[in-house]
Amino acid sequence: MDVCTDPKRLNCGHVFCSGCIAQQFSYKPSCPQCGAVYGKMKGNQPPGRVSINTSRRPLPGYTDCGSIEINYDIPAGYQREDHPSPGTMYEGINRSGHLPDTSKGRLVCKLLNVAFTRKLIFTIGHSRTTGKDGVVTWNDIHHKTRREGGPQRFGYPDKTYLDRVMEELTVKGVTEDSVDQDEHEEYTKAFSEHW
Image (cartoon, rainbow, N blue to C red; front, top):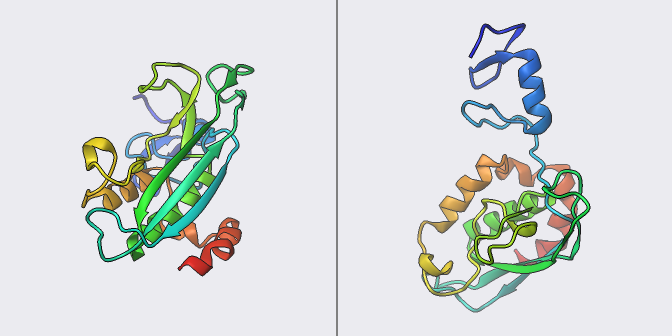
């Protein structure tokens, strides 16, 4: 909005003051103008666990394959400095997501695991469902929390879901290249027998 001091051009072509973009990158490593991600984005998701199970039971719209269930467990705890009310307690949650056991469904499962490792799946904020503040909520990466019911009930069939969630993951800097990084070797070993 002003004359750049010590201008820095990002790979996306946008130009910012070096000091301003350094401050932006300390908070979120992405271009403020176009959203291009530089480096790994880390969220403020509370500590938790993820587990993955496969089943031969098909999902509506994917009758020729089994399904994958990804389960998240976030125990109750106290908000940290990067949460809205540090020191205040938050309730724990258990949530599940369903994916078709196809090559694209398996890729999305791996990408969701990367996003969980980077603390991007959940955050602490306002729940639109319960109206409560200071609770664990989804962080703009949509999941199919039901097997059936279509998009209006967060279930299947939904032909465009896998593409949409991959776009949401890309915005958070989670792409196919993320799966190959060293920090995910343990995940690959643990779940390679399923695929």
